[in-house]
Length: 98
Image (cartoon, rainbow, N blue to C red; front, side):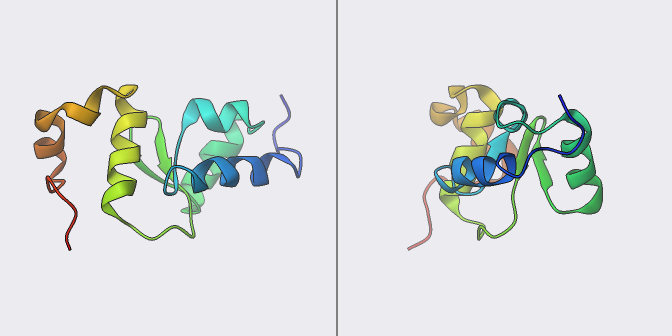
């Protein structure tokens, strides 16, 4: 894998993020062609932010309740969706604000 991804890799990960309210997993980023060092560089520069172990938020997506749901599902392989323990631990409200 190359250090800096091909031009097609960045659009691919943003396309994935768009369907997940701005959240992506490390595995998804790697599968899109980004190297570990490219991910690390984006995190170090603040271009991306880590919301959980192996789950990142990409720029250009406003924070939302659905973003929290997507990040929780990515962090737990989908197991967090019904886990009130996970939600309380993260301080995520049980329902979106009206």
